[in-house]
Length: 475
Image 1 (cartoon, rainbow, N blue to C red):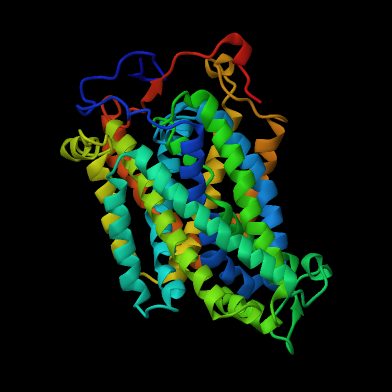
Image 2: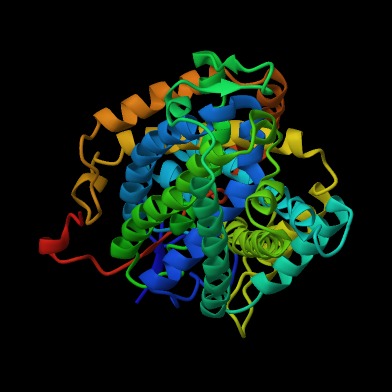
């Protein structure tokens, strides 16, 4: 039977922990978890909403940036897999880092995760209008807000039902990505050498992409592939999380990168001109390669994929707020409300509303600002997980049943160095905004949480029956 323990002491949490269920219902297996995680990675939505911005700055170097980002993400996925099976909590990064590194380290990870969970869904939702244009013209901000509210309602339902709903939408978006890839490769206009020697600009003003520009674009590329970490947020909803979390993380990364990277290469080679590639209007390219009917079909599939992504992100992100309330992060009344779950569906209903409604408001913030800040927060969050991985084999965690990454501790160290360099290449405005949020959060820690450390910010992790000795390491 699942119970809740303080990993630092092994004792039951104090009475200050908010009343209510100690953990979420375990209703999904590896297939449902993979469907939900892939839907949150939402490869086609990333391809059609975020990648066009990379085409504008990196040109034919977009695919190369994604390859480099994927190599970094392999190391990130190894860190998430080990920590997610070692600390299976709905708190995700903050529970993992807080348990292994320390409570303040966990708080800093929580701040970055909070930035990501609140901002990413609106970015996706705003992109819906562009792909509904063949049918109806709607204000992107207004439609984005409507998508966020719809996703909030869906997030209140049973998680198993949502897994199959989002799985259906996921199928449509993979079909759309496949159609784009086939059309792009079928209308190749340039040599594959442009993938390794990237250029950007119009047909008459093309220029080579510098190494600095490529590195600066890695934050956006990491944002494109971000989402495989959803598996750790769903750890409390998964059956046998110490086996299924790692499988879901690694499988999702592999499938998601394939669905994104192959069409990116096809678009790069098949774009009618460098101007068209830099413009990033993929729907227009599809129509030029085929006809209006195919273009409309692909656009509708993409629109549904974006709605799908918003639904899953609201589900994932509500788990973070639920876990933070259960860990006594906020004043008492707030904790009791956010830690409450629906008696019928088992979903953290108020935490879901707390994610979805502000997300609808954020649809009215400029997308460029949202994307830049999120890219910085994602890089910083991955860095905190890499730090946590360096502490994952200290006593008493070193002998615990968990998936163990190869090449430890080399991979986390190299990952930290690479991520630190990527941060130095980001836009100053985005760094300042993210740093300001972090400073405000640190003040909350110093002035409110730290003086109440005996009763607040108590990171609790649901415990599971240990794996057999033969399954101590799941490769």
